[in-house]
Amino acid sequence: MAVKGDDVTVQNSGATLIWTATSAASANCPQKIWVENRDGSIVITVGGSDVADASNGMKLAAGARIGPIELTQPQEKLYAIAASGTPTACILVTGV
Image 1: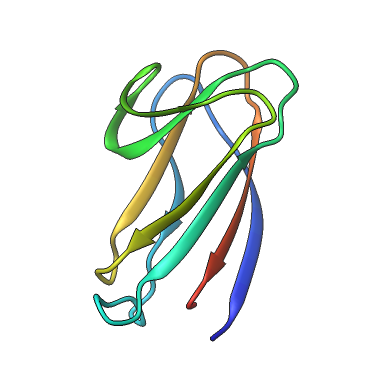
Image 2 (image 1 turned 30 degrees about the horizontal axis):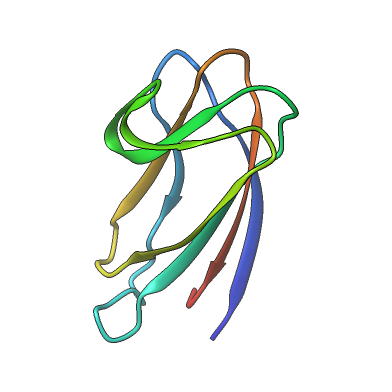
């Protein structure tokens, strides 16, 4: 099972795609994702394509992390949006 990490700049004008599950994702072998908000003051919200600032997802306070989030379908996507500015989200994915 491979592990991948990445830093993603999260926009505040619309949902930013932060991860797309590969063809290896399945119910028996989910891709597990951890997301860390690297910013010191800006909140980001993590969710689906309809994520909006502070709604339709889970708020991730500055410096906080969440996970694992399990993606069980190939091409399933995870998004984030920033409350302001363009903070960096660090992701770590297993099962790639």
